[in-house]
Length: 154
Image 1 (tube, rainbow, N blue to C red):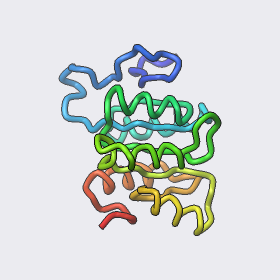
Image 2: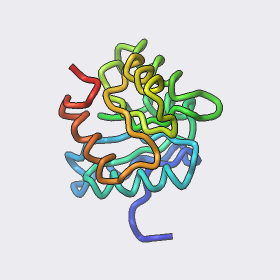
Image 3: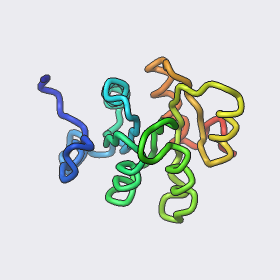
Image 4: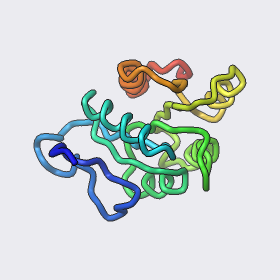
């Protein structure tokens, strides 16, 4: 294992994300990354941290909803196809909760059809990144979503 700080893992529910109160991470936006594929989750985490984000992880939609309630992030990167609770269900839950409804969501999914993109935007996503993704594009989309400039915003 590397010496780099680890992001919150869904298998460590009491862990505090590496953004805690230390000055090294002060001011970094907090991103919740939700994907059921561990390698993809770790890859997105690595690139988002390198891009200046603090990260929490969730391996399915139910864990994502719990994390959203525990510590609402500034942005969510959300896979749509997951066991237990789908990304679509997470999006609907967020839109129905006034405390979560304004958090921008970037959908990152293997679903690539126009219908899937339209459905994601209809359910509240501000951007749609198909897998496999370019890491720089992922970070750029997240930063644009935070700035209110996602493809589905406005």
